[in-house]
Image 1 (spheres, rainbow, N blue to C red):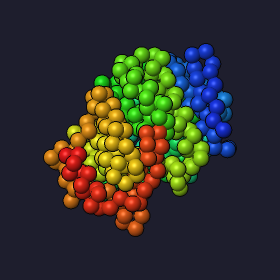
Image 2 (spheres, rainbow, N blue to C red; image 1 turned 120 degrees about the vertical axis):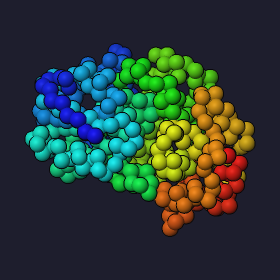
Image 3 (cartoon, one colour; image 1 turned 30 degrees about the horizontal axis):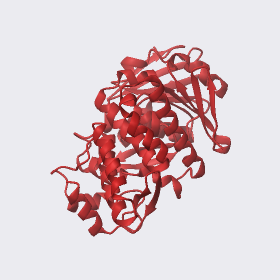
Amino acid sequence: MLTETTGGGKASGMALHKTGKTERVRVPLGNRTYDIVIGEHLLERAAELMRPLALGRRGVIISDTNVAPLYANRLRLDGYETTVLTVAAGEASKSLRQACRLLEKLPGLRLDRQSFVVALGGGVVGDLAGFVAATYLRGIHFIQVPTTLLALVDSSVGGKTGVNLPQGKNLVGAFYQPRLVIADLATLRTLPKRQLRAGFAEVIKYGAICEAAFFRWLERNYRRVLDLESAAIRRAVRRCCECKARVVSADEQESGLRAILNFGHTVGHAMETLLEYEGLLHGEAVSIGMCCAARLSVKRCGLKEAEAMRLRALLEASGLPTRLGERLRAETMLPAMRLDKKARAGKVRFVLLKRLGSAEVSDQVTDADVEEVLNVCR
């Protein structure tokens, strides 16, 4: 499914800068450096925020059937000629077939190398639209406008774009950085509570892998964040973006350090693939994956049992799942995990915690370890 609407001016080291109620986190990548603008009611200021980028006049906004009715008309792009292309909401749209449908629309819209793609939506839309921008005319400008907590704190930052194959998640894609990320916190108010909790799993992930003090703050303030209290949600989003900017600037294309951002994702992605993206949101799968990775960390990386329990307790208190359930078994999970992008020569590598706030990639985990932990986490 792909729908199209056309409009005119409207769409029918790291530094933190503060401008009034707007903050900017910089992702320093040389000539690909860009800002994450964090604040409220930024959709109405999109044209103002984009104008310093000196983009071409024509662009396309890619959104989905949930987000477009809510926000496409609020994304003010005065002075630009834009067309909204809407895909079906859900993980099924993150496919080569959907990417081809979008790409085939662009020549008819007279987009050139100065034109731009705006991703208006959550992680699926951001990954799909970024892949389209990266591949059309060998790359045109790309703006991220995330509308879910998961996209705000994670998938919109760092330049990972891509689509899924039947065999696994994110197996086709490119590293392609946006020119700008517009993080409008007001969009979270229309997010279903389940989606908000799923995004919060990625927030917890950053405390677990990057900063123990932030993890402790989340233990005290998780209810305020989930209730979208202004100061709390702003601090959580900003801190996650700062952590990711630091990691991405040190290792843009995941040759080393950046792999720690996949904490919980090895098991999580395998679960999503085996369940065919039905019945489990990405953040929920990552939550379960983090619990499994924490158990492996106790066994293989020296993580204290008490810290593994603190992680699980915070996930459970936040309303997130921590067990695989009866549908998934080790004998089917292991082959799916061997397709993980961190795998080497068919051997699964895991992101493990040395302690809360410090992570590393390990190839010391055996199949027997994985089977034991998956059975314990059932």
